[in-house]
Length: 305
View 1 (tube, rainbow, N blue to C red):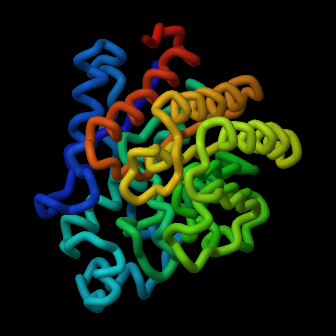
View 2 (cartoon, rainbow, N blue to C red):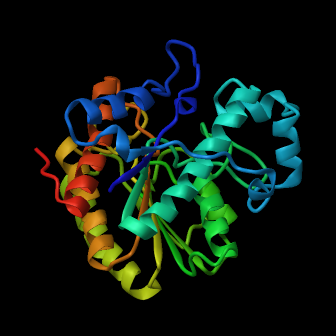
């Protein structure tokens, strides 16, 4: 069964015209349920990160500032959400959900987090709507507990996962692959194990050509036993912040290719959502839902329209 992490805590209160489409965390599960792609049985309620688990990845100083709500105004502004204890709690559930998805993926081949992909969080600070770095925390927990030996992060968010790159810079057991817009946030990039920078207006054909030239080689050469896939939909042409030009079908084909590569190689894949900022939230939700539909189809034999 496709296991999907979901909790009401994922949706955080933001001002009405905030550029982060928080409503997608309600709309995605509702749509998947209403169309019959999944049932309530597919969902699991994630647990919360412990302090010890947070400190596998984040510094004591940063964690202290979060739990005592003593970030400076500048530090809080960099995150982009109102800093409250509720926001910190939300991040603890989202990050642990990604770890739990990895464990479910090891059992079933694939698992998915309705949230996650908080790849701009560094060890000592948050930014870009990211408080804790869920994929890095999950990776460190897997490695520390002997539950994985070699982890490949496939980050196809339009924005470079600068936090992933920084945190995992000296961790040889984790390979960070980021394919992102060259002229986009973050404007000061970090060095991933492999960065592929894309020109503005890169469309389906060029994007998919680069991906298909790259991913099989990485899987073959690095030989991971776990993949985290950041399946962000801010690559769409409709995205306000993306600057690329993928169609809905191109984004879907991208997801299908990544999942097919993981399944063919028999490598568990945990999928996190990452960003999506199209003017019409329907574009965001539909593209995210395609990822879930494909996972259900490819791994569990369900038909996808």
